[in-house]
Length: 109
Image (cartoon, rainbow, N blue to C red; front, side, top):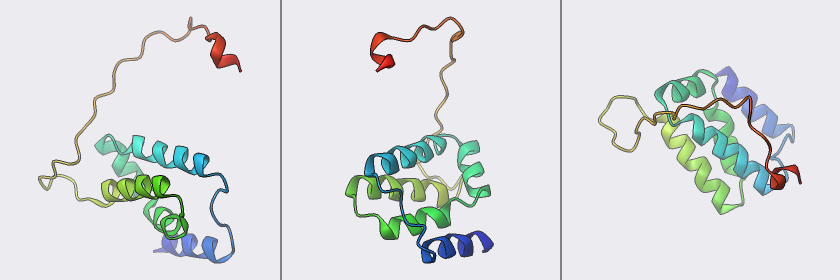
């Protein structure tokens, strides 16, 4: 409840949304990435992310960002283990040794 109040207060104080829709989309997609596993969803719940998503959803004008926001909310707020087929665990692919990775030329722009 305190976090919901903080989100509401932030909106009331004019904290507003990030002005760039692409940045808002990228941030929302990061949250969606965290919903891919049960541990990620539980961590987002523990961090009380929902009130902030709710407030941003109320202010969001960009349909693509709004849709990603709605998807994140549905996954974060859903009950685990209730036969929901929509939430499927994603197994992380093992990451190779990145210490020797070299940047590509197009990454340097």
